[in-house]
Length: 170
Image (tube, rainbow, N blue to C red; front, side, top):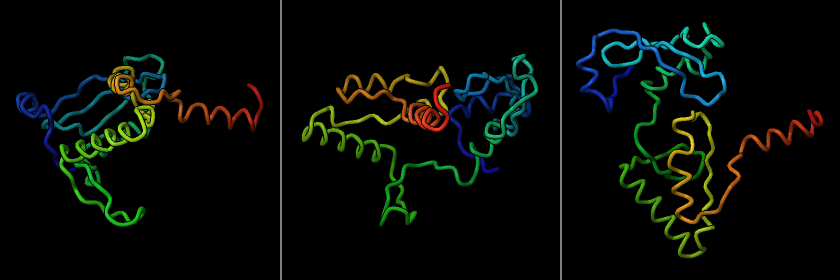
């Protein structure tokens, strides 16, 4: 696996070269799986099922098991990009974080000036967020901005409607 800088690199250099840490899954499914992370030289090299949660003892889903590959894989996106050419061509130019955030800020300001704050529609949902990260700051930001209020169920409601349409009320 490729090595990438870590925000806690100084702390990682003082830790033992190899250790297993008890942790929990960051995803938002209701299982709250306990995990064991094997860390070598400051990098997570393997995730396995922990024993702390009796409900999920000995189980880890394949999505979470592959987290180390996602964290350090060669295809991981490390910098913002802006599309060049037609959509679907897959051509992007790298931007700095300040440049990307500045573009977003300008577009939001333009939309508010030309169409009003309600023309900004927050499009986000829980996704893989857990209780710690879900609705932490984005909801406050869009509320203070005066953006449109969205039910924020861009996946749950359509899925429920499709299931009800297909199978009837459960």
